[in-house]
Image 1 (tube, helix red, strand yellow):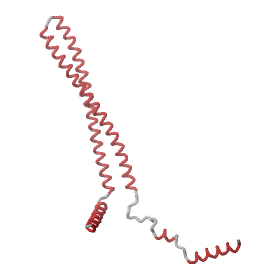
Image 2 (image 1 turned 180 degrees about the vertical axis):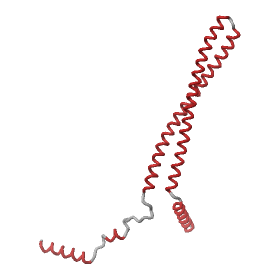
Image 3 (image 1 turned 45 degrees about the horizontal axis):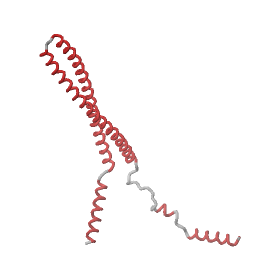
Image 4 (image 1 turned 90 degrees about the horizontal axis):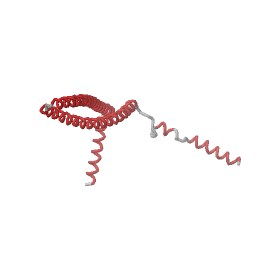
Length: 182
C-alpha cells in the first residue's frame, strides 16, 4: 500500500512539473497585468460616474434651495392676501422639497463615502499594478532557462580544484626545503 502511495505521489509530481513547463509564466504575467489594467480602468470609469453624479446632486440641491427661497416669498404674498388654499398648496410643495433635499443630502453622503472607498481601492490597485509591471519587466529581461549558465557543478568549476601529481611533488619539495632551513 505504501508503495502505491509513493508511486502515485511521484506520478502527480511529474504531471505537475509537466503542466508547469507547459504554462508560460511570461504570458501569464502579461495576462494578469492586462486584467489588472482593465479592472483599474473600470474602477476609474466608476469614479468618474460617481463624481458626475455628485455634481448633479449638488446642482439639484442648489436649485431646490433656490425654489425654497422663492416659496417663502410666495407664502408671504399668500398670507398678506389672505389666500389660505394657495398657502396650503405652497406649504405642501415646500415640505416635499425639504424632504427631497434631505434625501439628496443622504444620497450625497453615501456617494461621497463610496467615492472615497473607490479612490482608496484605485490607489491600492495602481500600486499593485505598478509592482506587477515591474515584476513582468524583470521576468522578461531575465536570461532564458535554455541558455547554459556556468554553475557550481560545472566541469570548468570543478577542474580548478583538481590537483595533479606534479603539484603534489612541488608541494612536497617546498615543505622539505622549509624543514631543512629551519
